[in-house]
Image 1: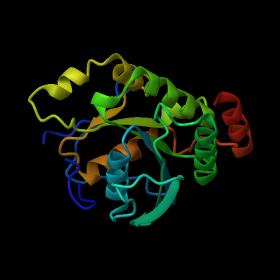
Image 2: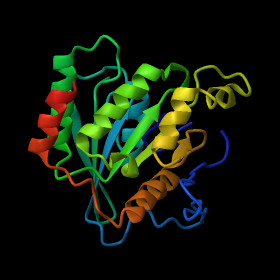
Image 3: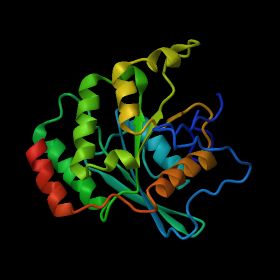
Image 4: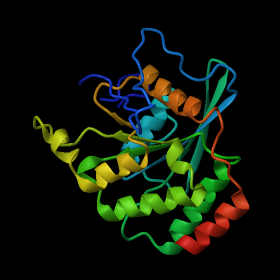
Length: 232
């Protein structure tokens, strides 16, 4: 996946169906991207594939900021610029691995909390569908709740293209209970990766910001770190 190109065939999906009052995002030939008065957008990348998260982060930033082949030992924060808005992307190591130690997981989450202060605007959950398990879903819930009980109001699921290219394979994975539960928890906001272009992704991120009245997750780093040590 190239940082300046397309994430990977099909039409654009951006579904906001948490309730009757939430309308699907409309496609437009000219994208608003982000709210005009927004000076900085902070996005935290979480999920079960470092290479997929990194490719998405590179796409958002418009440069190769994250090496997709090598998983780092710590959270990484990289900034870019879109028009007059500063884009800040915090990419996390593989926090959903079953064999990660509690101590290492706690330290990673604490670092992520500090790097995203005063709070993320969007949690972008990049999920490889064939590998997303019930255990990973529960771990992801705990990580998000460490930041804030309202983290799910700021979350968007991005479903990666399955490695198997057989027709209909993604539709089969969409029925996976863990993936369905995660999407529901995120107010039914999700994107499918196929042919997702940067303007559409940025517009979706901006839509979430607008739904939250431009307010980021109200993060108290000391409180979040304390909660993290009790949770993991």
